[in-house]
Image (tube, rainbow over all chains, first blue to last red; front, top):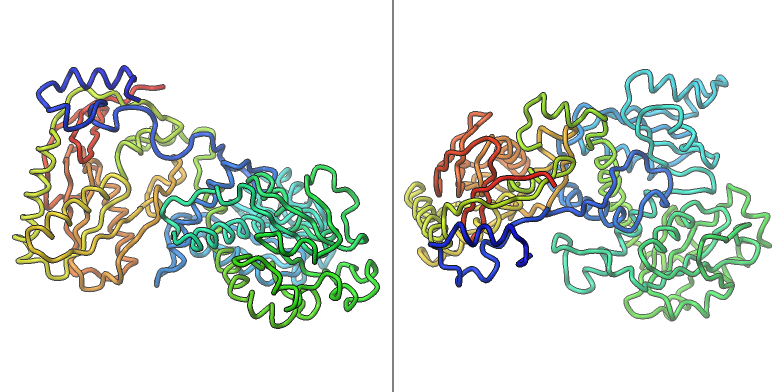
Length: 375
Length: 189
């Protein structure tokens, strides 16, 4: 900066001022862009964690810091997305994700339309495409899509002009869950170091972080998104599961696979337990839930072998007594609840970054015609 | 939000090229000391006074004013910081991103809030800040302190405490820091 020609110009132009008091470079903010990283590309959709690079994830987490403050207020609402409409299109059952997205949209003052497959024309046999295009015709800015089929949100993104957020598709991905898990890890690590968010916490804590993802990896969209996010941020993920629950293809995951939970436990910073997806037919891959629990459940005895300060996380809903023992679940409960609380702030950030950007190609022109000074 | 950041926001970002120094480091300091005294004078003391600096340009100024107030009166004044990104009226027209996490000390109900910013220009940031403050409780009164009033208002906003009035062209840029005030231009990259 000090060698910048602009700095030389001001030094010459302001000769009466005592330069010694200001250091060699003249008035400190002389030139160059300031503030946010410019490398972050605007988001159009959030369909997969692979859509975001490390800077993109860091960006979402940084905006989440600001929205976390909003969520903690006595009036937790900002007018940022006033006049925008968000549809939550859930073709598959869900409690926390749907409520979390709808709460997030409302706290940003967006209007929320709720679509649920059970009470809609989908029952009458309307195709997904017809349903989506019908809703889109009502004038919608974003679709939050959950569907049992992998890739459904990507298809929806092809059919409509609106922004699309993947809220879980089949065994494929669940990117906002991965983002909120990353946010929770970052928050926990920052607090362990005595820092609070807002004091410029970056994503350095993920560098070399050792995470064990334990359980039904084969059927878990959460695992896939989380592993991608962790790898992007430089963490080391190990997948721990019975041989039958290893996904058909681990190529490109870039993870270690281990079938012995006890060997992994003392060496990791985070244990991420996945829910045994019994409704997705996981049962047929296992002799019994009890046998699974004996080999891969986090019991109190196993939890005692964790390194001090290690985190136990679970995306919920928990199968108590299967992948997590009752007493460990109560111990981990505060963190699990914090994951839920952070989920709202993270989804606010995602909706904001998708919807608030000047995405129209003529936005700059529009800004000029509206006379937005400095836009 | 600092006017500088706004101007440099993509897609129309540019490089700030300083042209002339308007206030020196001592001038800025004297102005802040005067503003601190004016706050005490206007409010007959510092009862219920809370300083709120607008991110990012107003924050160092607010902390400096609080420091002066403490030296003068011997009692500390709470200082908060406010980021108005989510309250702006140009969301959707240009990228509006929060610069920092808002930190308001406690409930503002019944308090006398002095908003502090570096440059008063169109008044839109102050409009957003007033809406944001309302979400933290009903302040007894809100006053506005700025280092530079550069004119070109687009909303009926008037500052209570001004460091210096500087008539400017619309396309000029004012850069304020604790080290001085510099007038310059933004050139495209």
